[in-house]
Length: 430
Image 1: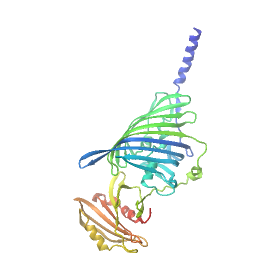
Image 2 (image 1 turned 90 degrees about the horizontal axis):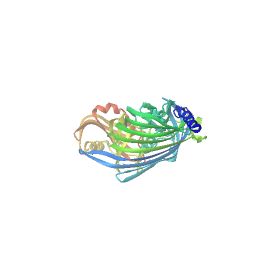
Image 3 (image 1 turned 135 degrees about the vertical axis):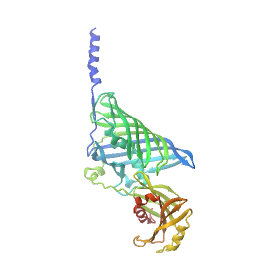
Image 4 (image 1 turned 45 degrees about the horizontal axis):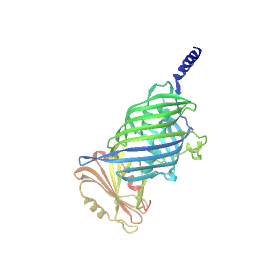
């Protein structure tokens, strides 16, 4: 009887502790540092609609990122600006049996990540990134969301809480959230560690495409340090076709390991991290070294062959214009094609029927360069467009033609961005 009474007393004493609330909150502050390892495994299919028929292409991808991160600024209770120094950044994808690999060059391993109302903006202070490099440092799981996956207060095992729009946007890599339905739950407390889950659905927009996402995640939280130390994030995406991306259905599994070493790399020291500039332009180089250009992020490369580079201008998720860069026949050094020959070639473009001429003449292009523009309203393959064609010649006689096609109702939205794109072209640079 004495032994039974002792056991009952012990059980009663333990019961309140098991139900005792814990403070599940991580307070982000400037100067916070962490070391993160993020691994991704993704499978699914890209969906194309060609001639009224739907075609599915198999997609597989893997990625690994390891970096030190320092918080520079905080907003909405989450890191808003962080500086990252990557030790590893690599991704590989197999699309329809063809493999592609991407890595981050050594001179672009220091990156600044900024949360904005319209999505995440990553840049390298050393200079413009390529679109592939930008995707490599932007498309992995964004740890800035981690404090927002918690309730930020005391909760007991079994308690639930809604995930905020700001945390949902960061975690799901949305440009905008249209419907937030993620819910967190405290699932256990043991040996100074709390475990939590995040489940539900969310809807948003990325690169102008509608995305529906189903999430099932589990995480660990260290009660002594008040920090999330690990996360396993699984998601299923159903993505519609956008102006620069195909439709897709994918499943992804992400693992995040978070450590807190006492020292940080010198590149992330207090005075260095606070002064990192934002270099928002992107760079692109012709694989054969015939030309290179620096352009705004609103221009997206959507296709490239030996003869042509195709870019689309997207403004707040809406298609605005398409530009096609083509290598033109080379002229003698210091020379260029005649304006008459250029205009004749434009007039003879297959499928093009010119109407009202809007512009015809030379434009300033800088020392040793020559630039001519022809712009007109008309129809391309029977579709009304405003078409502007530029011919740019360099000092060595290298020439490119840039054709910009715009729906008439979008002509004002282009502004001078097509001319800026053309003037940024440089010859003979990789």
